[in-house]
Every structure is written in C-alpha cells, then in structure tokens.
Length: 197
Image (tube, rainbow, N blue to C red; front, top):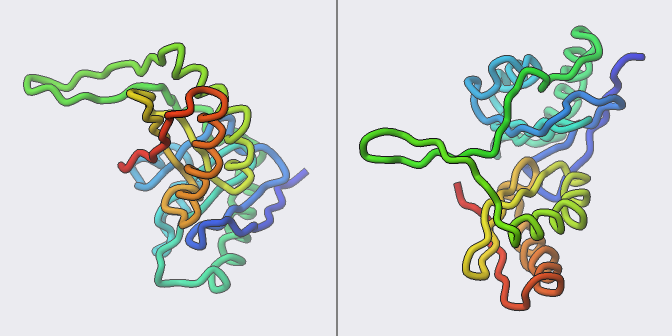
C-alpha cells in the first residue's frame, strides 16, 4: 500500500500539516537547517524549496513552516504531491530510525563545553505527565508539539515546536489551557511561559 497525503491547515497561518496514511517516523524532530536534516531525505529535499523555513516531522505527519512572502494556495498542492512522490519512491520506512535524540542541554563553560543531562525532578515529572496526557494530543492534532523545559519557582517553561512555534494563538493556549490545567492540578500559583530560543 502506497503513501497518500492530505494537507490540513493549522491554527498557525504560516504552517500547514501534511498527513500520511502510514507512519513515517517513530520520534518527533524539528528541523530548520540542512545540517539538522542530514540523513532524513524527506527533510533534506523539502528544505531545498526556497519558501520552506522549517519542518516538524512526527509519527504520520510533516508540519511545514513557510516564508511569509508566499500563500499556501500557491504551494500546498505542489508540496503535497512532492511529499507523496518522495515517500512512495523510497518505500515504506521510518525516516527517523537513525536519529539519536536525547534530553541533554549544552552549557557554556569558559574552559570547555559541558553537556549536562536534563534530569527532571519529581514535580517536573508530574507536570510532564500532565502535559503528555492532557495537552500533547490536542497540540499534535494541530501539527505541533509541546514539551517541558523546566519548572522552577512556580514558573513552568515549555518548548513549542512545529505549528505551535510562532503561532498567534499560542499565548491563549499557554494561559487558557495549560496554565489553567496546571493551576488546578499542581499549584494555583503556577505561571506558564514559552521558551524563547
């Protein structure tokens, strides 16, 4: 059975979600440069389009962020056909099988760079579980992802990826959805912010 692709709009007017009828990845990854795309052929090829700014690859969809100078009606069909042709010419496969994603962060040290594993505290694990259960499925259906960055001094910092990154409605999602949930379930004094990379 071949791949078939349909395009779906997202709350972010700069991002379109291209959904496949089969799985294309076993892990999620956001890609903004050809260097980051190395080894992921679909991402390498999509980034060659001059109007593609970034790609978010996850499970059975690819969210594509475009430049503001072009309209979706001018490129959506071209991208949909390109993605279907590329996937079908490469056969059924997992495009992220050789990608190693780990939860580490790089801390600059004057003498050298240290890589520190991001170990969550019990409170962070509780918040992460709530995000994964209540928030992540809805965000993914809109072509994005949300992950916990840290929790400290009643501040919950989250990373927004895919269609959520730069979305005009992300502030209302953060405050009205996520913050309200965490205030109710964890601590009434929690404030949720987005990590500004």
